[in-house]
Image 1 (tube, helix red, strand yellow):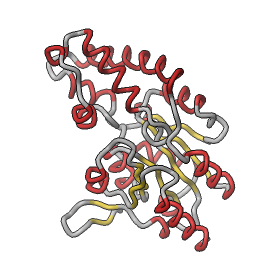
Image 2 (cartoon, one colour):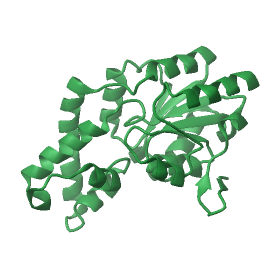
Image 3 (cartoon, one colour):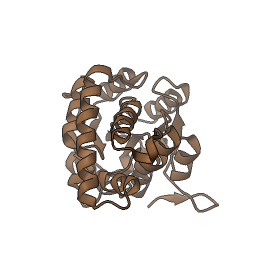
Image 4 (cartoon, one colour):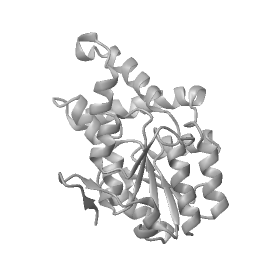
Length: 244
């Protein structure tokens, strides 16, 4: 069960409390790769084609507040509250195809990702990718990043009882890897994903690639880092090494 701060905001446990570590779980979009600008570009182009918002391009604030980290159903409802859900979901399906074409040309890992991947491998921890992205996107991104052999499971929110921010995708990852929440931690980048991890009782390290730090803190992140080269992260990982 997640603890709470004095003002009632849920928060996850300190990372060091998870020693001995059994597993590390990673979100994909914005966590493994800085993909939000590509998603934003795909949305912007397709929304302009249909004259959305009177032809005014969506900005970063709109993207973060209504789309980033959301399930397809939630994003469709936020974007097109007056449309039938099926029509909104078809638009998102077409947008994902546009995103994949951009990703093949321009996808880049978050700075320092190779270093933290090596740390996980060196310690022999189990690992899974846990995402609200469609499976076809997830597997493409993992492949483009050279991580197909790194992950032992890929959990897709749309294949669970409910996607993030519900805890089910992370709970499914624990079950598939046969590990406990008490000895696992998560890398996330969105408030939605952070809330999912906290609700599953797992400490969350939030990578502040695009989302405001306050939203990640309010969602209950244990630690917020700029990227995987952040000294704050390696200070905590060294503490974990000493406690193992």
